[in-house]
Image 1 (cartoon, rainbow, N blue to C red):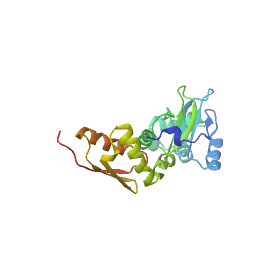
Image 2 (image 1 turned 90 degrees about the vertical axis):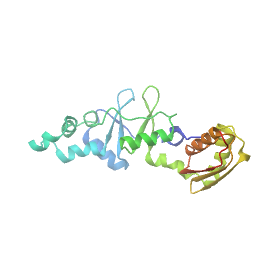
Image 3 (image 1 turned 30 degrees about the vertical axis):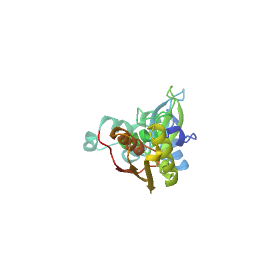
Image 4 (image 1 turned 180 degrees about the vertical axis):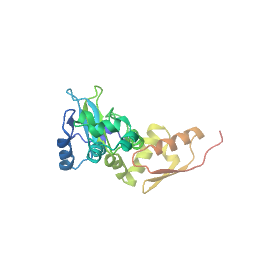
Length: 213
């Protein structure tokens, strides 16, 4: 029911090694029209991420900094300002996700870390893909008709084990309205909560008539 990272991720990933030079990275960011690269060690494990903002520290500050400005900078920022390779400039450790993580989990991690994309790694920490904000938002491209079908089949009948005939489900612009009488208050709350987590659902309006406990 819930889309996983492997359902929407891209397996064509542009990455750099930890010894990649500043000029090489700047050129590839411009050439590939991306804003960040995963940084890999010799065994293809993700050890960090190099982004435009990481490179910008050096472009803006260079190797000479006014004493006043330097004193206000954190040690990591000072190191980036003088770094010359991916290993010296990258943000580490990298925030990553697993192919079997939910898209919702990836969205929360992106929002919390304020990043535009996340490397996808296997159990050994090796790079297998990348998921972007656009990939996360792609689940909202599902039609209202498909959402309604999924709510009835996968949520009400499937995950919650209730009779879909007891409920009326309507969907408009991703907003689900649930009407009807569940077998119990607990069953009704379970359906509403599961519907909120279904792919493509923007919001759920609970119009259920709950029986006495």
